Image (spheres, rainbow, N blue to C red):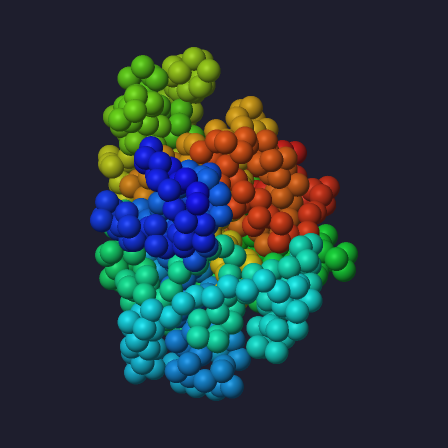
Length: 553
């Protein structure tokens, strides 16, 4: 027998009792279905059983590890149904390319025609599996056996991935004999995966799934709202294919062959070419006087603005960088979160009236004294920094709200050129395990905050949910209004960031609330061979985070 403490209540259970049985006993206390358990702070799948006295917590789709498990399991279910409907012998490859809105864009290749009828049959087969409640089995195999297994299944991305794994064994999941590898936990059986939809789109289809704020509601896919973002994401995938580095195994292969320097140079050249194209678009319309640069946290907006300014200079313009943060209201007047902390993501943090007054005056040819916000004192200062725009002058304005017309309400629309910047990583772990763009930005921010602000990785994890909420409210709704989008992710950067992030992550205490997420990120970084930073150009966006930039960032 073992004593299990749940919500402060201790109860005795026979050894060998499954966590699923215990979860069912407590399910009526939860609005959403229990998907995982935490045993003494460590995540466990429901098929595991009681082995010792412990404290148990239940996780649903409203918890981050829970919704990640649901999404991962739904992708596995989709693969099982697609291979079953089409036939494995007809399939060359099925790739989960990237997240799109509230879903995942999946592109299959092979000897078949992708039609609405085929997608409908796949959807119906998925619902059949849900009703059957097929167990999702897990077995432990040697890494060598996994390499052989996925070569046989013609899942060559996974085969290459495992060639660079340090661990001797890996976990293989199966649904009704269909085997696959996934990075992370799974639900206990297919009966848990009730909420999903499929929509044919472009050369593939979108798997729509519920989100953490409502785990039972499947969003409707609206292609029109994501056209520009989709175009940039697909272009990034094509970049990865041209570089022959679409997944981690391929990147590790390039590193092991000593080709990383060439890969860095090609990637940086591709980004510089894109920045030059954006500058050409801006210069081609002389009515543009304000370049509005926006993007989520750690997307590299500052370095991008500097590099764009250089390209504008090369084409005869005189750019002036302006940080919207310099228009913060004094800290004592800033809005606050419910917990009393300052809400720096809110539009109300800015003195919008003064910003518009200054920008309108500059557009009219007047001389304006520009402010500087001192983050140490929390006050805006004026130090005689005057600016007047000439015929060839242009302002490059950077801030998270720059695509929101409420920020620049007084400026004529025809005078603004909008650029959306984000780190939309084109690299995936393998064909079925994608790398979330938020993970890339989280690691970037962790490394930068530790270097420039003395913040711990624990601090970064703690504030990240607030940052994400701000992005969902203030940034993402406006991204499609951009005139052009720029992907600031580099295919090589996680191999570089790994060297900086791992020591920070190992510093998070095991008994802290952030330890589970730290362990997940550490496991993720373990897929990469490490690369030092000496060959990265000093104007690279990556330098904004690891240090050594030639810009003041």
